[in-house]
Image 1 (tube, rainbow, N blue to C red):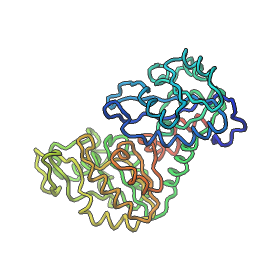
Image 2: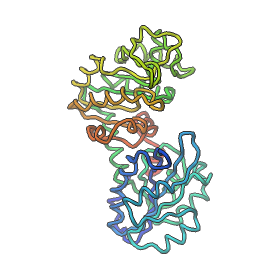
Image 3: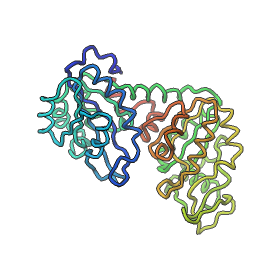
Image 4: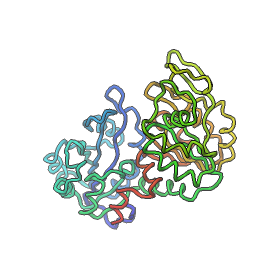
Length: 373
């Protein structure tokens, strides 16, 4: 894959840049801007070289409802005062013809057109007609077979952005890590993470699990999990993993709700109770492993973030920050649970969640293959 820094001449060229502005909102405003900030260096690089930049993205809420990018546009204008918004192809055609070198347009949500997710060739050709060059700066959605990810490279000279290149270089370190290697995996959707667990069970020295994944392991090991969230129909897939001596589970958990919660030993769980978070600070074995590890890879939160249980995730980040290991963090929910100062303590923080998992499991992504081909 070629980096955009390898492009010979950019002045006056129309550059389609696929970014990922699918960020969380609070009261109609951008609530967490990590992904937006991470692509600014590529946008500024293109501006400084006189390119005409068209930003392509999507945005959805937690229920997968397609939203407008206008709120992102209002936020992004603080960073790019001359930014223009194009609501449809007619506006885009007009604005591309009018902007000068260094101008930037944000195009409306790609997923408002069914051709994006369907990877429709006619839709792809329409998008491609507005550009001379394509840049993929959306590693976090490059596991998707969508028009703006795998279609555009067929029709335009293609490059990766500065962030995309960083993502690949840093995540590839997990394929040949320094040892001891600690792998931490949390969050939900256990079924999508089993292949990754099986892969790193061979190379990691230690594996710590949290979130729904921990509940699944507790259940498989015969502990009472009560009304805790668990994955359905995967017990057979994780029995061998659960018995692996590399796997570390917490001894204490948090039950209840935000107003009335308590710490409890996993051995004392009752059928009417539900696990909401993990007590990380009591786990001396994990703390010692973190201190002696040379490479730590972490994806996924420890607790139920939707109900406000952040403490386990934040405590784990605090312990890792005291390590001298090379540390890599990823997962949108995990990042949302931590402050900017927490993120600065990691060697590298990925913008990706599912794409990070896919890349680590398969060592490539659909978007990468499209660029390589």
